[in-house]
Length: 440
Image (cartoon, rainbow, N blue to C red; front, side):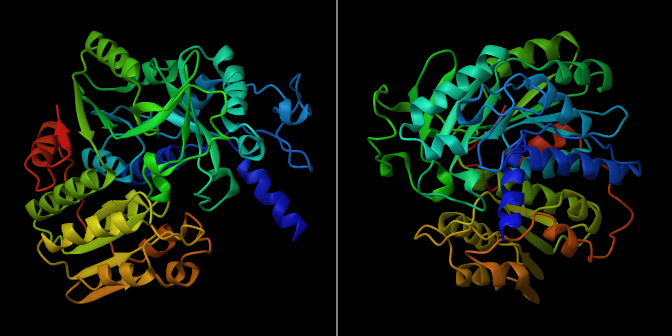
């Protein structure tokens, strides 16, 4: 048991972390398999954690072993290079960047282009363990901002949501405010002439307490299913400025959007944007896009796969000709939106549901019976994955489980030609999911 706990701590010390890293790996893997080329092997940088559970710096650095108050040494350019390193060699007809969203990766796969995040997460368990999370988060952020002036830090502390690991309680979202060097090289050297760049942006709002030099503190997150007004914790905000309306943790920094616009235009790449107010809106629009794309290629488009959180696999969805619908969190609100979308869509013959266990039961978390009701929309075969059902809601299902199950679906050959960016965005504009979705 002790060895298992230590191994879990080591996993939580890895960075880059979070949904964006998971999706970047999935995007590179799907492009490699679709192109029939070898997958790149890129080692991720790693923080060390001593046996007492204290976070230190990478081995050999000047602050290694300094404990909880060790100075964090992080190079955001290395992280950007690691993201780009997930992509197979070659040139591309476009690029999708932006907020971490499973449907955005599926959109990129339909276009045959890479998806890259504009932020990454760093676990900060010491913030959750401290007496003043906002001040502890600012101290850690100051170390990162000193070495990386082109990023901003959003410290998120959610005492309600635990998720699948302790690191989900507190984490720092590192957002680029200017285009990193690795992304610039990708655009300048590997995009074909006139290849468009699509920026997918989450424009939801949250209340934050602003700090200095690009730091802000966010109490709570939408992962719990609660709103910003539902969180009250005087201890966390002691000595801080009052909370004010701001963009959410998944937002794309406006400075990066302008920098990307200038750099893309200078290299002949038009910039398009897709803005959504809630993740379910983009999921429905991309699912409609896939269904129309498959039908135009004389496919049935009658098999739906409902993905959730880390349980997704863009490659096997593309390979098997499935229609993907992605839920960010296993919340009752997400299942309600999915149910309304299904009710307004033509029936699917099969519905496979991968309900990621939240790790703890909450009133806002969907019950297993609600996921089973979603599967019951199928006219022939509807099923909540058995392993997910057994683990729900307090267990853990590894992220690769969806891959293991979806690989059993037969190939749907020949592959359809990729969509063009104008055609895909036009279809999304005319989708039934237009409330809360803006295509520019």
